[in-house]
Length: 208
Length: 208
Image (cartoon, rainbow over all chains, first blue to last red; front, side):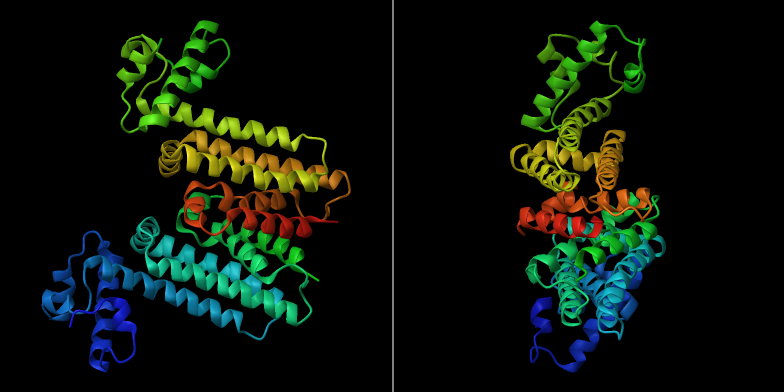
């Protein structure tokens, strides 16, 4: 068995045992990356934590970078889940969109202050264009699109501008609050107040 | 004479001759950085281009990094001049603000496509927090603030929200179109259309 992470995700390509083992590897790797950084972690250390051989790990992941990708997908996937939970909450679309800025900022700040080594790993992933990060960027656009649609359906937002264009534009105003490099540079300049102010302008801009 | 670039900028600390020589060094360095990259350029090569000794260059700049800072300040200073020229043009504040997004994107794209080595140098400067880059970020905020004030004075923009907060928020929506890392990542996704769409939402959000 020598499947890529993508193949592993396809139904039928793995048994429940393999699925569970894959998850355990990702969790063990994340714990090591959080404490020591991904650069200082070796595959054999992850294997030792799980009481298996490195060769066994390589049945699930082609390389250490593939493990990093999976850890990154897991981290950002948790943010995506929080975004969707908020987007589907029973609030006005305007309120949900405002809370989306806050949510992104909170998660980004938490990673920056509490898990700097994971934050740095995400920056490496951005440099190297990891698929897990492109996927997260897509989710943020999907959430923006969903909320704009919701606000249009409820009559809160104007309906004239092309939906796709508006959704992408809204998502691009998220960047200073979720992009790890931008966040790092703007960290001293009260990003919370800035996020509220951007949300206010964007919401006025979208309103019917 | 062993003055830092900041000291050189102080009036009275340099004669016209020194000023002119400093400019010539910056121009020669920029040409080398553009063609070969700042990493592959040595101070002695810049000195040779000008027919002077390296020791003479070091009278004006404490290190190669100080030369890079000055080249970066010169590059970004030209963008700042274009921004102020637009900001002070006889158009409505709304039109000037919309053109600011375009102008930033045009300059950033030009550097990315035509002067990739200078673009990469700016990314290094961002990583290393060069003062020349912080200064450019300040100018973008000053321009945003000036345009919001102009629009408030002319009755185009609402006046209730705190000016400072609004100006910083507007400036933060510039990032996807001027930050070299964000620009690079969004380059395939029609940044021109996105800049127009962001400008449209922000202008609606600011309008009276």
